[in-house]
Length: 405
View 1: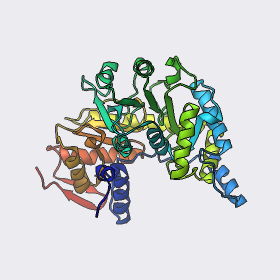
View 2 (view 1 turned 90 degrees about the vertical axis):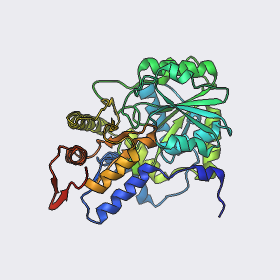
View 3 (view 1 turned 45 degrees about the horizontal axis):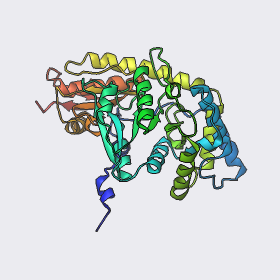
View 4 (view 1 turned 180 degrees about the horizontal axis):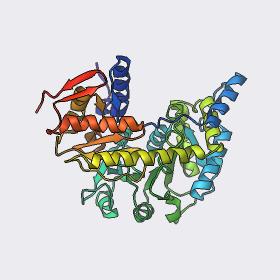
């Protein structure tokens, strides 16, 4: 059977595969702990549920415009004004089936085959494959100093005549680091100077800790006209714990949004009107849920850091935001896929291999679950890896025996 060259170059999403594996293990009754998850455990806001239920009760669940219903666009416009001090028109906004689709459609809008997209490493697992789906070339950039904080020089060195866009995700998945205001300012200015697109993946922008404030990319732009090449991506999945609702959006110049709408119209049409109504409810409703989630995540971050810092041989950079730690386990095993599979097999803890994010030897550990999952998960990992651990470990009524060196 023949499949396309692009299809052959694309791998399955490792995070989605892990979610499926966790579900299968739990259905079997196995005491699995999922530290690879990328969704908060809090419930969707009541305002979102009421808005969706109210619309569902009308029975009028019809096609939506390809670029989103007017009520959601209005809510996104207000959100952009309040959080970015940026006034935009409905023609500057598109609602999509999650921030992932918004990024994908943006890439399809701006990229030609063989053009390049630069993004810092570690990076979200989907970025390289999304670029490849456009026939373009992903260009990950590892900071020269080995940290998770790139310098503008690291980015500049990778720019070529084929560079079409720079893609920035801050706070960053998987590392949790928040890039400095100086770095974001330099990237904005570099993109304007080189006349290339800047895609800002801001999906975690308000889930930040230690008193830090979100960084507004528009603050550093000289050109805020309809020629601006900034494409801002956001959505309700992370801030409002509405991952399953699949509503995201993009804000950009009118020409880009028009092209994105044309593409999306042929791909999926507009997102479900029912789920868009829920997003309107979340954006227009009480916002205390966002702060409650942020505070919970900051506390969870502190618990995970305390356990990891007591773990000899593990190096971890303190996350500034998101709900992930990206810990260096290379002292125990340099091949992160091998290590991740070992932990699943031996102690039933699911983690995401760092190789999927462009940095082998690391594991992404999520702290968006319960405190019990965090503490028990790290304890199991420590028991599996530390040669000084006791020979036996009980998980509930199940006794595990260390039969490996």
